[in-house]
Every structure is written in structure tokens, then in C-alpha cells.
Amino acid sequence: MIRVLIVDDSPVVAQMLSYILSSDPMITVVGIASEGEEAIAMTARLKPDLITMDIHMPGMNGFEATRRIMEQTPIPIIIVSSVYNSKEVSLSFRAIEAGALSIMSKPVGIGHPEYEKQARDLINLVKALADIKVVTRSQRMAPDREGIAQAEKKIAARQEIRMVAIGASTGGPPVLQTILARLPKNFPVPITIVQHITPGFTAGFASWLGDTTGFTVRVPENGEVCLPGNAYVAPDHVHMVVEHGGQILLSNAPPDQGLKPSVGHLFSSTARVFQEKAVGVLLTGMGRDGAAELKMMQDLGAITIAQDRESSIVFGMNGEAVKLGAVRHVLPPEGIAQLLLGLVSK
Image (cartoon, rainbow, N blue to C red; front, side):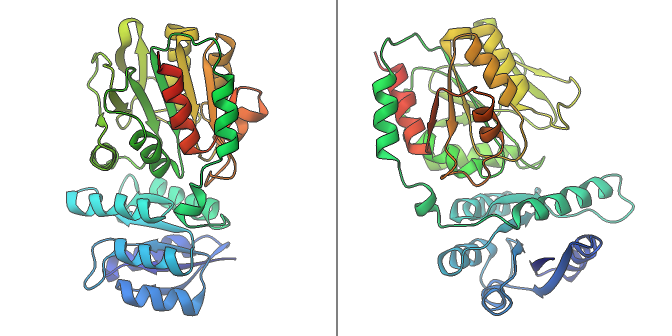
């Protein structure tokens, strides 16, 4: 059984979450807390396998409660937030930065067209994250100096790089933050990013990523041309692909493995357009999205990188790429940033 603690100051939302989670025989709700201090105390007493955490609560908010729990007794935490409150979205990503694993929107009511999908997604996410061994972010991000040095030695004949494409899912936001924070604002190559995230949070994610790294991060418009020193985060509900000249096209093609946007669409278009002048990076995340297309990039001469197992929340997408032999360099986030710098340095 997966033992879940629900933290939410709204009795209606808390009961809805409890109803959804209790509908699965593998999940039991062991308690409901209505504010941060109570959540910390109940976590210590009940020792749940996972917490769903509201952000806006009286007294201690969800960000501070997450920070304290991750410092004292690290445990998988899913942020359950409103997409309609910009302050709440901002605090949600600060909670991700503090160690929460994922973010979801507050559930809609029974009878809403999206109810069944939301309920299924929440249950699946709880099952996927409950067994993850959570450590503090500083432990997870400890750099592998030897791996970085080995990767730098492999940068022998430097090839011209014109595009960096990155894919990420669960655990991706703080890793992307680490990478972009270590790149200069005048990084000479555009960066395209597909981050699997609950619809409605993408704009807030891009804003948080830009604010905390100093890098220019934006959600692109259809037809926009990629510029050096800019990172482009795929919008909700469309695939982001690149065309000749670095133009971004937003495609309404069907979902790929149930995902839209998909890393696979971004990687395959990058492989086709830029071939050996591209870098593909696959980070932590559940599933296999982008793994086969990273192999396509490698086969066409691109430099391919995967985040290592030790620093990954979920060694899923990146692990699949390693199994396929699609990866030239396996590195922690700091090493990825250092390698990217080395690849574009003249």
C-alpha cells in the first residue's frame, strides 16, 4: 500500500483528492493537514510514502513546508496548485526548487470532461513517485568531477554547433535550472526545450526558469526564429519542431506515446535539419520519450548527452537512451553545462 498525506486548506479540494486516491486499491490516505506546520508534524508522526502539497495556506505556506520537510525528512512531494494564480504558480516552482518532485493542477469536479483523465493522471503519478528515494538537492546535484574531465577530453575535433535540443520530464525543472544558470547569457547557440509538465504551468515554468538563471527563456510563437542566447520552452498541447533557418513550428499532429508536446518530435526535427551541427540532451523523466530519436540524432552525427543515473529523480527516458546506445556522454547536470560550454567555445 502507498500511504499518502494530503495537505490542503480547502476541505473541498482535500476531500476530492482523498476520493480520487482512495479509489485505487493500492493507495490509502493516512491523514489530511490544513496548513504547513501541521503537515510537518504529521509527516514526522505518520511517515507517509508521499505527500500532496497545497501552496496557498494560512500560516506556513506549501513552499516553506516543502523546504522544511525536505531538510528534515526527505519524502516524495507532489505540489497541487492552481494554474490561475500567478503568485501561487511562482511559489509552486520554488517548492520544486526546494525538492518537490512534480506539480499538478487542482482537480476539477466529478462530471467535468477532464475529471477522469485528471484522476487517472494523479493516481499514476502517485504510484510512479512513491517509491523514489528522495535526497536533498545538494546531494543529488553533487558534480562528478571525473566524469566532467573525461567528457572534456573527448571534445577533440570541435564541430560547429548550431542548435541544442533538450528533453525532460519528472525532476527536470531543477536540472534545467542548474544547466542554464551555468551558461553565459551570450551563449552562442539557441536552446529548445520540451519539459513534460501539467498544462497551464508552462508559462510560469518559463518565467521561473528565466528569473532564477538570468538566461532568456520564453514560450515561442509559431514561426518564430531561434536566436542565440535564448531558450525556447514548448507550449502546451502542441508539438514543437524546428525547420531550416532555425524556425520554430508548432504542430497539431496527434500525441506521441500520449504526449503533446513530445521530446521525440523535437529531436527528430533537430536531427533532420541540423544533423552533425546539433546537440541532443535527454534528462531525468519517466517513460521513453525521445530515446529513439536521440539515437537518430547520433546516427546523423549529432553529439548526444544523457543525465546520469545518480543525479536523476527517474532514470527513465535517459536510461532508455543509454540502453539503445544513443548516448555519447553520460553526465550530471553541472557536467552537462560544462560540456555544452566546451562544445561551443571557439
